Length: 194
Image (tube, rainbow, N blue to C red; front, side, top):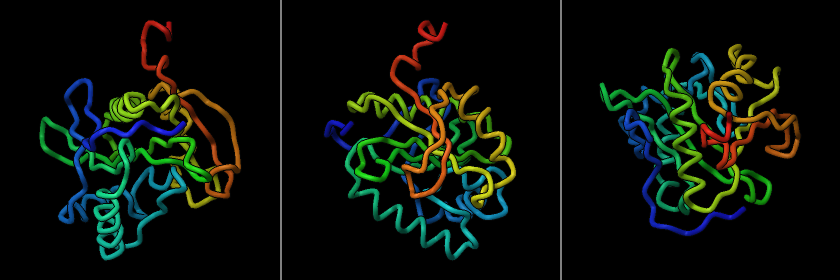
């Protein structure tokens, strides 16, 4: 479903523990730690593969920063910063999925050991739902497609802890096999989940 046009800002974390802010050029080193080839848990979404070095990360960040002004809300890419210590602990994106941009992907990546994944997903989903999106998806590469070893745990991280429900496997997105998880507005209501 297409999102409704609204003024551009960003998601807010319901618990107040996270800030979603625009990426900055000076975030290149921390972004490389997240998206670089040696990072644990990298490359779950086919949208961004492992980034080989700092120069490539700077180039990718420059593209994201430039893209930010042209994306129509609720779409965006954000650095996820922990309020308590000001540290960037992850990256997040809410973007239309190919082909056609009718479905929306929530994509997040946390530094190893960070515990904010569920809060990040809930924030992205609530942001999308507040803009008229009726469901969001997480798209995870199948094993053997440049996925870090932690990918096998993605089902547990995405499905169990973050409240997203398993949909299945498909080749619809990105022209490759992926696992797909979904979240709808009712899934954010603890009473509805029982």
